Image (cartoon, rainbow, N blue to C red; front, side, top):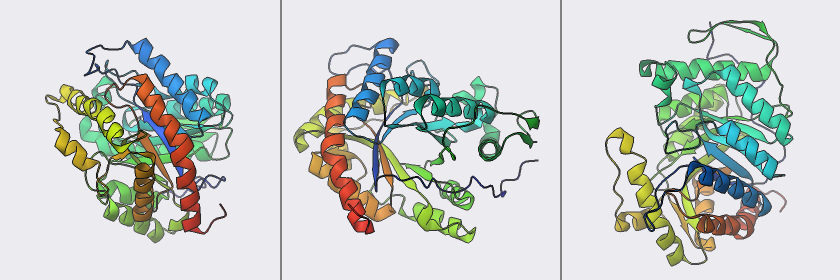
Length: 371
């Protein structure tokens, strides 16, 4: 049987040289009707827009391009590795990661095969953020019981880590057939293909991630800037208790945001699309989430979680996140709610050319690293 306490050689943070702070674009390739024009893009249009976003993010110097997983017809991103493979051909340097791979309803062998293949084709730029998934449509789709939600993730994360650590592999579990000296390929270009754990904010998930010594990608939708401060503390404490050096653990925040030349324009552009996205994304759960303008503006204040504003406001917010959580990266979902492509590209350009260089330099100085 699998052992969730197993300590594998691969259970260490990725140690390759990186910027002091990484900033990336995140998308689920959603198909949402434009609340201003009323038009709905085709899946093919959104697919082409997504690859162009990856290309621009790469050209302006962003560090990451991430694609998340939803299994509905109003999203194209049910197979992130496929989207990232297309992005790999349009980019040269930017790292390519799932913003969440819903591992509990997937096969770890297949996940490894897809991302190791992506690593080969991208020249060693692939990463995985493995999570339980806040959207659960994939569980009945692939024949899994939601009652096994937590056990599925524990077992499959264990297998994924063991595949990364060794080959061939013998393994036994509850939810998939046994492996007997199985040769699983291809192997990744990177010595240690990064595997992060996506955590929605529950302290139990953060603690289990810390015990494994894995990097943690923390999702924050709305709320105060400090919402997950205790969660991150518990993650680091759990890691230290299991013998992992907390200083080597990498953490990320995944959240919504937008940047424009002025504070007013950033909020005016983002609001109608964010409100539409909040309503539409929940419609298959029987209700939407209403977001009045005043509530949205409150979430963009310096003490709240959304990263929205002028370049200086976004710099200040990201540095505040770094100071509170000791973050190493931020994945920002720019364009949520079907925002037009021109506005998305404008924000990516500002993030890469005006925000990221300042944040990297300031974080390096605060860490005492050379600029």
